[in-house]
Length: 185
Image (cartoon, rainbow, N blue to C red; front, side, top):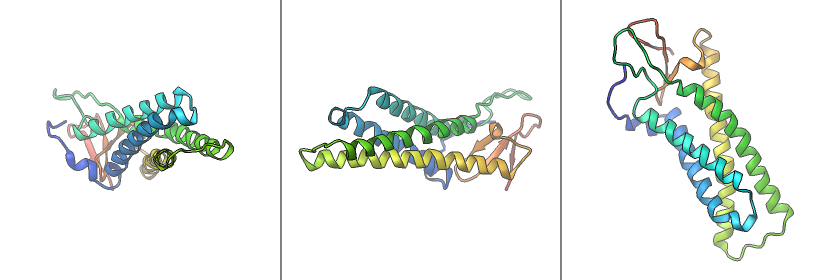
């Protein structure tokens, strides 16, 4: 059952907690940089919308893990209510790697093909930070999805929709037993 405790140790737990925390931080940096630089490099507003969407999902996912919402939320015996955050994170991770790869490629191509003159070093620094944050976000989204996929390959009988990411380990939610979580190596 879900406990009412706040799990702040999740934010720095290796490897899953650090990856989800890094995903939020780099997505926020990407949104801020694009808000500052978009008038200079003439990007479409869809990029900012999608950056904000990935930031929102990353924040929801981290908050759900901090408040233990990825576990059984039902307090009634022999009943369960479970939100498969690992499955959602996997799908958003695949979409994130595609989007951030495309976005960083567009930024690099725009910087090389167009003769953008940055009037001061701060604009250049923010543009470089935008490129680095999009590349980093794509890598983190992809690596997290890869870790979840590898974990499903190690345990064939429990799919990704039953994963409960704990920060440093993965347990599996099974609704058939009284003790509804299994810890596997």
